[in-house]
Amino acid sequence: MPQFLNSQDADFEARFAELLSMKREDSPEVDDIVAGIIADVRTRGDAAVLELTAKFDRLELDAGGLRFSEAEIEAECAKVSETDRAALELAAARIRAYHEKQLPQDAMWTDASGVDLGWRWTPVSAAGLYVPGGLATYPSSVLMNAIPAKVAGVERLAITVPTPDGVVNPLVLLAAKISGVDEVYRVGGAQAVAALAYGTESIAPVDKITGPGNAFVAAAKRRVFGKVGIDMIAGPSEILVIADADNNADWLALDLMSQAEHDESAQSILITTDEAFGRAVAEAVDKRLETLERRKIAGASWRDFGAVITVRDLDEAAVLSNRIAPEHLELCVEDPDALGEKCTHAGAIFLGQFTPEAIGDYVGGPNHVLPTARSARFSSGLSVMDFVKRTTLARMTPAALAAIGPAAEALAISESLEAHGLSVRARLEALNEQT
Image (tube, rainbow, N blue to C red; front, top):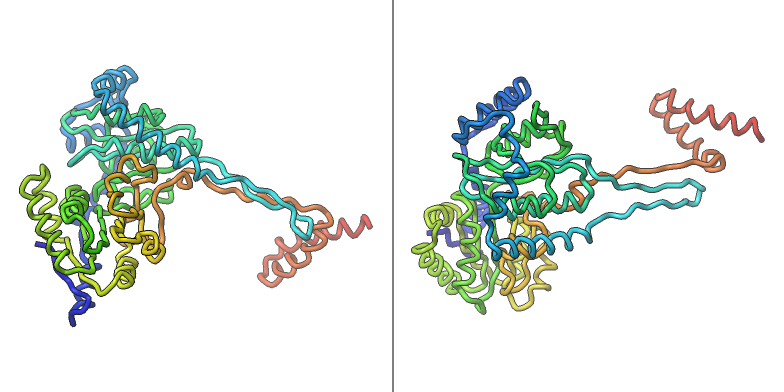
């Protein structure tokens, strides 16, 4: 049974604040363990990765078996049905088309002082993508991580995907092939992140690591940040649905369960203007939990972290939504565009009752790698921009240096940085000698 809250209740603020502060990590503190794994991989390279793969994935390999061969990939891809292949290709095409519109443009101009200024965008040289392989495997995550990288122009793209007991998901390898991935390694956990960051004899290091994972993967990404770039520290999945009474309760129940079934620490919240409708959705969830394949996981998530909140009106719903800053936000109301304008903190917004969040996970086009744990207040979902960096450009003419150089010299003197000032003064004096 989820929590039921009403914004008119005297204890609402305290209960809502408690809801926001719930600790939902699905593992105990793992940082010390991860630190040891990273140190081991840095010291022993392949040997450490192979031992850890045998320990955690129950898979004995030699160094030559870490990477999937082209023949292995082709053989696995051949197992995919035409229906699934067509679905992956449709998703890939839509994701690629959406992300191509994100490509930033170089710029160069001359300002009023005659200085040429601008910027240039260039891709990172190599990226490593982590693909989960624990409770479930996600070919959609391959598409969502790899395609923006390729659109950005990343030259080398490697993915790591754990294969516990040697079980391979052919869809993951087909998604890698469709996306243009260059290397696929059957490695998971913190050891995969460490290998991508620092390199081993068999796995060359990358410049940026993206992709979701469990608490060990998140801790590893946090520790290697600075050596490499990362996309974000992803937490458990979450969804917020804002709905009026003019909706199908069972549809919304399924939307809430679409995130709850990810893991027991996921969070699903419904905000509604009609308390009776909120109860109806909760009843529909209970009914669905009788038959869902992942009902044990979804049921635990709904019981421990789910909530149904009744509010006065949609304006109040928007205020609460911005405080939650959800990963996924569904607006199932009469005018979702108007409400969406007021919802300024969300990883992704799904407008209208015919736009379930699940569409965004697969074929919508926008990326499904999104900020969690209220980080949508200050960050965005994965995009082409995660795989490029901006280099600024400046060119001074003699006249431009004469116009603005004295100000630079004055500021350098004020900061007691003599060489800074002298580097400008030397050129100004040379210009004065020429006139």
